[in-house]
Image (cartoon, rainbow, N blue to C red):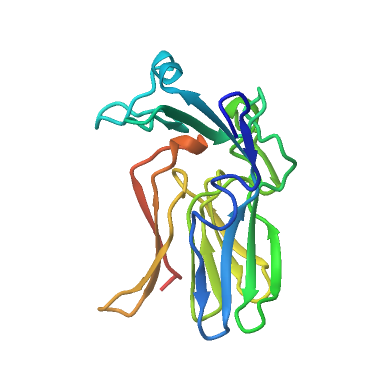
Length: 222
């Protein structure tokens, strides 16, 4: 990468398993990872060019802009963002988001599958309403239970899902009031012993997911 030549990184900065974090089923020795394979476009520029484009640091009120890296007190600044087409879609073929389970003893992949449908995303940020599993971008982690379930939301589609940790079969899903770009939490009531799955469905502007102020809890019928 140089001032005259931008660079493309694949996987990009939000690719691999670096964002959502993994969850581990200790009893079965299985680690579950949600990940992305989306390239990033990185442009290095002079301090003068950064000033011309209005690059600035977040000041507590106004954001510095998606992918903007002002790098103040240096001769340079950078712009690093997903490599998107004019339709604001990734320039690589789907699936862009996947979920994988690995055997911690052998290191082998037990199962992997495309993660999420195109229901709430599409060209120019317009929802396609197509519930076709294609593997969409995701930010957030998973949690596993001793009963062999994996709970995860994370995708640009505002659904929370439960998978079988050993097979990857999707067992359940539900629509959230906002994007589930968070990691679910599981707890047991100290009074009745009832178990709950809770997630903050606040959404994520960078993913064009619906914003909300809701925290959603699930439990089996009493």
